[in-house]
Length: 275
Image: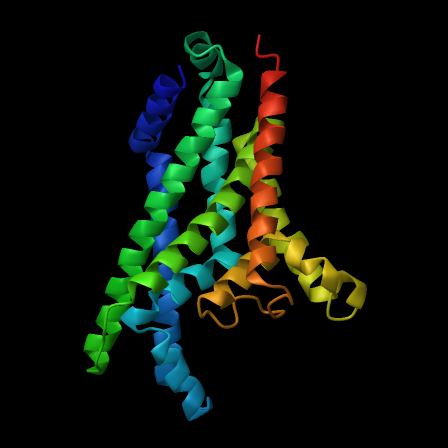
């Protein structure tokens, strides 16, 4: 039963244009913000110290793709992942297909599990494609600059891809959970954006003046994401600075967010009246 449900979910992801559009938006963010904007700044802002300009260019090298990709997730990658989760969590509600889906797959727990597995697979594929796009951007910069370049090491790539996948899944499953709770795609996107761009960023900012909030920062999705981003070489992933906690703490925090969001989604969906 779950295998059929998973196949149906993966088919829907492949054939719904909204997933492609959101994924392309994320890839464009990498190209424009992580590479093009930084490269233009390194060329045009003369007031920057020479060592800072060189550090910016070094961060655009093909060997630094892990830092570029993972460092993009805490700020503007999280909201995109929330939208992907919302599309899977509320897509059937929006199209009015939920009752039809439940008639084919009446075991709701397995249906939720299939949706979550499909979501994690989508994030894995998207992050792998993102690494390829980032590498090509870095290669283009190196060719323009006429500098030596090298492939990233296998260990750095694996660590970066794993970190990007875990961060992406944590944000996406949160979006899925909000979608199951609200039954509204638009509502989920609004709540998710407010959470990621307003609430969490406000808490990070307030921690600078209210030190009691400093201990809260590692427990936030963006805080744990920034810790992992720094561990793969990304500097400045958070404007307020990276929370003072280790990588194991960040992994546990992200895993807890995933588990809580997934379990809450399953409980709510199993009890839902769709008549």
